[in-house]
Image 1 (cartoon, rainbow, N blue to C red):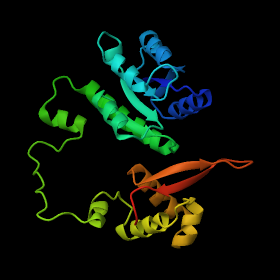
Image 2 (image 1 turned 180 degrees about the vertical axis):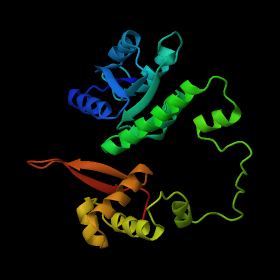
Image 3 (image 1 turned 90 degrees about the horizontal axis):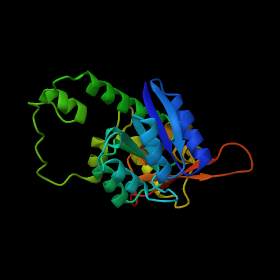
Length: 245
């Protein structure tokens, strides 16, 4: 069982994240912390395997917490950190990467995204635990590198067009043509669109429109804001970030 500590200054957000983690098989939440100081104390006392760490904390920046966890001395150096934050500036992302964070999730996010990141972490955690004397192929698999002996793709002789670059990164089930349609539809709506509005304007089903919108969010080309009404769940509105379609 992977033991997780949730760190967020917002009580309701921390509780929500804890519930989401508890729903993933193989994970259990051993505690919550509201500040950087509480997080450091909790890591020392509870010895979690993984910390879900916010950046915006009342007493210190989350990156400072990460640095102190890595400063030396067990058990702090043994814990992994998954950053979960609304911070989307490049310097914070680079700081998390330099500090050894296993991944970086930008708020707001969907439950399936957190579930997928945790499952990926669990697989790597199990692989590391099962390796007694790793070979290069074992190390490549854990770090996500190409297997030893795999051919290195040659650099293109000419610059890659934006549409081709998008196509190269499209996941299974997402086509370049439909992605271009959704991209143009969203880019032409400065105020943002809900999945339903995008579906109407593009002629797609709501499910398909949402799949492409979430793809653009996950790839950093769009962002999500929440619009709260008088009742019910907040509406997710998508905004294009990567320039005109």
